[in-house]
Image (tube, rainbow, N blue to C red; front, side, top):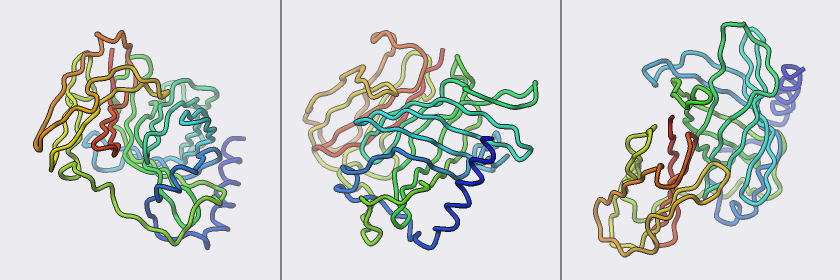
Amino acid sequence: MKKLTLTIASVLFIISASTAGVISDLSSNELKSTDLSGKYVGKRHQFNADKKTIMQTFEYEFELKQEGNTITGVSTIIKENGDYADIKLRGTVVGDKLYFEEYEIANQSKDANMVWCYKSGALSIKKDGDRLKLTGATNSYMADYYIPCTGGMTDLTKVESSPNLDPNVTIGTNGGVLNGENTLTVYPNPFVENTQISYTLSADAKVSTEVYDITGRRVAILETETAQTAGRHAINFNAKNYGLAAGVLIAKVSIDGKIYSSEMVQMK
């Protein structure tokens, strides 16, 4: 039944593909008015051990419900041979990203020796014409202990168009005073107890650094409107100090009011 549902959704998406345009970022007004609720269909590309080449591609689907910044729903992943799993997911929206994690199998059909890896990560919220897209590199892990699998890439498109999106508006990348494309880092990541959140500023700025769990609940405040000089800064984070168990966390850094974020995974 799940395979048939996904096939029908995919056909509907292909029929209306003529409305698609160039993939682009959402404007700030579009982000504020966007509701991610609905059905998304697309692909899940699973990496090999080198985390670069693709080992296998799955059909992938999200059914999401958004209330405030909180996301709940179900993902469906389908192999070429018809094996599938419906997996409960939860998450939160931070800026222009959907942070999510799968956490419980609701239904499945598979070989007895196969184990599904749960997916997690930060999917960029973009648009293709007047349709929402969720796309990006996403991690995967074994249930309970959050031991990493090989990870992969997720690319999903909403089946229905959104009246809030203007396909003629294209905005640039984040910009701001973060220096370079990957200067907000968490290392080690995944981690067991201790990790370090680092960022590099291209100019003096006021910085707030916080940590959230996957439901959007703030679990730690590390900096509040701290005046920082240009250059690299690093903050230690010890999950034990905040009574946190294994799971997906989010590092959120606000620099002069502009938000940057990164996934953090705590293992047992």
